[in-house]
Every structure is written in structure tokens, then in C-alpha cells.
Length: 255
Image (cartoon, rainbow, N blue to C red; front, side, top):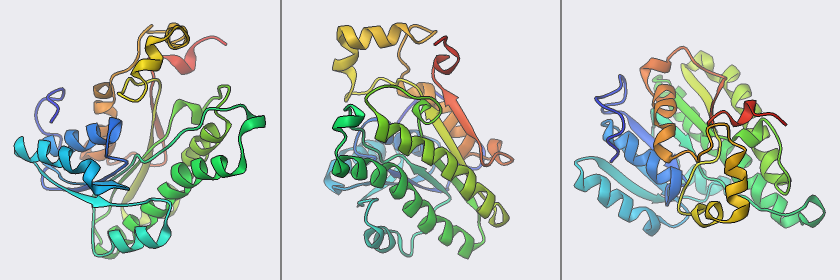
């Protein structure tokens, strides 16, 4: 569990949290962060065995965590796996990216990106929100978007479109579900270093991208902690339908 944030944030101890895409990277980090704040965390990925180690890490640190198998693109699987489960906090983190020119973006690849990043987030949010409303408890749904949902870059048309759609979906769901005490917000990271991209950012092309970030560095997963905990906790109780950008100033950099 992370020790980057001292003390407990209000409204997190004893709460139930779901993190999708929790097999590695930001998903695993967010799960450990919330567990460290006293939340009971469910880690979800297509293969439950991939998140089992993270559950063990959390449990060894005194936290509570369980793993489930979940394909967020499958509406029936989402309904089945999340049935009879009520969460206070949902982190929609499952996502994929395909890097190719728009001419080379075949239909199947485009569909997979949209299905995972946008439709999958909707399916999970809808199922979780229905349970929140039925129990009259409200809750917080945090969609992990990207600065590429707010600006564009080459070779990632499907990914950028999916994240832009996710930002707008966040606003639409926030409007509909505010009456139930359900808050829906988006977290938009910039370039964050993970095991999946570390080799690329060590290359000449990756270093060139880093130089375009005003802070001249990559973000680390813990750089997202404050924003995520704000949106998940009672400190963010009057925030809904908005997005928080954590990108080292990338969005305000010159074109």
C-alpha cells in the first residue's frame, strides 16, 4: 500500500470500492491506495489470477481485498459479476490503446478500443449506479480518462475518441444521477510512467515526448493520488460532472 498520503481521508474507511483494469499499472496502484485508506477493495480484470498477487500484497499490509474476473465489454458478464454487489466507490480504469495511423486503424481494432474504454466504462458505471440508487447510499464513480480526451495527438485516433467520449459521458451521467447522491467525475492523467511504457520513454522518441511536458518529466502513479482521493472522498462531495487534469502542465504547453 502507498505511503504517499498521510492519514485517512474522510469517508473512505470502511467503504467498498471497485477498481477495474486492476491487474497492473494504475489500476493496481489505485486499488492499493484505496485499501491503504481503509476501503474494502474489489480488484477486477479479465483474469482474476492476474490480480491475485495484488490482493495478497494488500492483505499482507493489513488491508481487505478480493479479486474477480470481469470483462467490461461484456454486458451480461458485467451484470452477472456485479449483481448483488454494492460499491461506494467505482474506479473505471480498464482501458486499451492502439497506435496506428487513421488509415491503418482497421474496424476491429477501433471497436476494441471503443468497447473497452467507453462502452465498458458505461456498463460498469450503470450497473454500479443502479445498486447505489437501490440502496439509497449514493457514491462516487471516477472514470480514468486522459489528456487525449481534451486534446489530440497523432496515431491514436480511436484512443483519443474513446477518452473524449468518456469525458462527455462523465458529464451526462453526473447530470442524470446527481439526484441519487451519485457523483461522477473524470481524472485525466498526462504521461504517467508504468511498467508498460517505461521502455518506450527510455527511447529517443519517448525522451522527445518528455521534453514537451513543461515540468520536463514523466508523472509517477503517486502523482495521481491526491486527485483520486479528492474525488473518492468526502472532500469532493460537492464535485460532480467535472474532470481533473494531472499532467505536469502538458495541456497548457505551446503548440
